Amino acid sequence: MKWTMQDIDTYLQAKEYVDTAVIPLIPIDLKEDVKQKVSMGTFISTMADAIERQFKGRVLLFPAFTYIKNQPLEKRKSELIDWDRHVYEQGFKHVVYLTADGDWKQVEDELPDMLVWLPALPFENMEDRYLKQMIDQQMKQIIPLLTNKWQSEPKQRP
Amino acid sequence: MSSEKEHRVSRRQFLTYTLTGVGGFMAAGIALPLTRFALDPALEGGDEQEMVAVASVDELTEEPQRFDYSFEQEDAWHTSEVTQTAWLYLDGDEVVALSPVCTHLGCTVDWDSNEDFPNQFFCPCHGGRFEKDGVNVAGTPPTRPLDVYEMEVRDGTVYLGRPISRD
Image 1 (cartoon, each protein chain N blue to C red):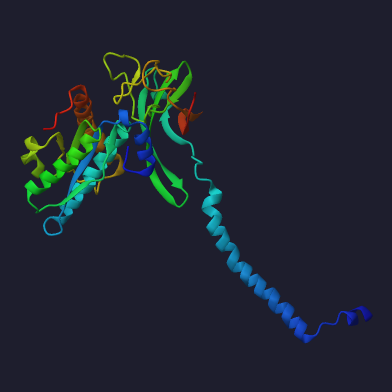
Image 2 (image 1 turned 45 degrees about the vertical axis):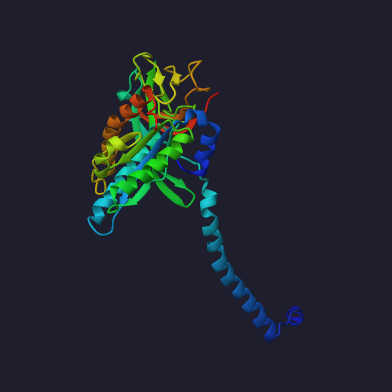
């Protein structure tokens, strides 16, 4: 489900079935490597949409957690932990942070739940059918991450 | 001759009639296309979906296979590229085209993907299951069968339209 009026109605009526939050983590930067940041952003949004399509009934895809790339990692991390706490307390037993930004890898162990880091692929000049193949291949990696996560106990928050 | 006299038209009247007439035509000339353009998208009917060629019958087997296809969808003023998936298989000579959308909450189902439930469609979200013909397995969350696509086979090619709900 998406963060839209239509989907949120479904969510409110079927809350007990929707226990997984997907939060895309997307950096903003107008100083250095602007295009690379934009490319990361579109890639992650595309993958987030694909995940939502596959797992529509159990996943709520949140608007992206957007941050300025050069602000301290500690600050962003604690903000993300606030997001996590909020959604966890509202019944999302599983939270997935989806990003192409390598920074998060450094603090992966300090995050309360699962970080999925994907290296950004240059989607922009790709023909549609290749794009589809790429998304499918990525999804083959991501699907088991989620289904396995569902098999295991939700991570406890401190 | 006399009748022509009775119908005499003064110069002023003549000019009035002519100007009104010409003005009317001009106004209509402007107004009609405008109205037509404004109504056009509404007249086209939004959910009319054309049949799309998806697969050739030769490719199909008794085993359901996944086919992805995309088409342009016109939604009033906005055209977008939509990608859809169908599970196709042969039941004797008949082609069956099922929608992959789980009727519980809309996840995408997969054929024969769970070891415990061979030869069934399985939904990874809440364990919903469907028989090969799309009928939901009792005791799992979905409450109705998978939708079937509107379908046509022409010259050995399978064309699909909209998914239709069955109860």
